[in-house]
Image 1: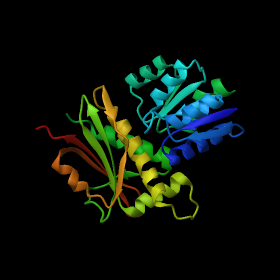
Image 2 (image 1 turned 90 degrees about the vertical axis):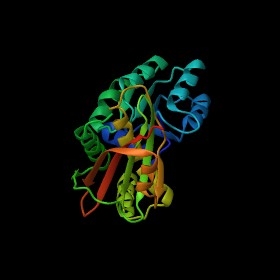
Image 3 (image 1 turned 135 degrees about the vertical axis):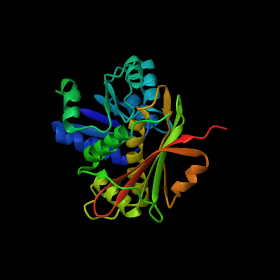
Length: 120
Length: 149
């Protein structure tokens, strides 16, 4: 499966990939995008099986990306990985069509708990 | 308005241990390092202010080493900015959750050689914490509220 990791921080994209491997998802293919605009181009060209997306990014935020993707009729499984995990954010994410929101900082166990139902 | 120092302490310790490994502990107050790395995120909305992190250039380098798994290679300047910016974002974003909603979090702004005291012109410090990160290195975390006119 192809997993698209969207975050303006290259360090965080590396941490997400490391955690995915530690959680047992190392056999999947990982793609990266540095912001929502880059991610939208990748999704439009060939939708991945899962998008893991930061919220706050330059060019296009994660919530803008998800809204655009859903408005174009694409139902790609989408979840947020963000430092902002307030009830308001979680509701906003759900209403826009996200399957989950993983709060930063996260552990391997949390990632496994959230992604097992989707990837296994 | 003020928030609990214990909550801030827990956030910083959790972010550090989850993302960087190892433990940090509360430190006595210290002045800023010479030529420090500074990173801040601005919070606007129901509460307006900022969360400022500062530390020595050496600690910023160590943080970058861990995040990027450098394994002996010296990191590039943009990698140090990226890593410290992401640490600032994670700590700032979690501290933002302690304030009433709705609030907006800015992207992190990172500078090498910035002056932490320069923020005092427009902001009042509300919480000042310092963390012993080992080997004499200290991370300072300051929550500041925007001064009203």
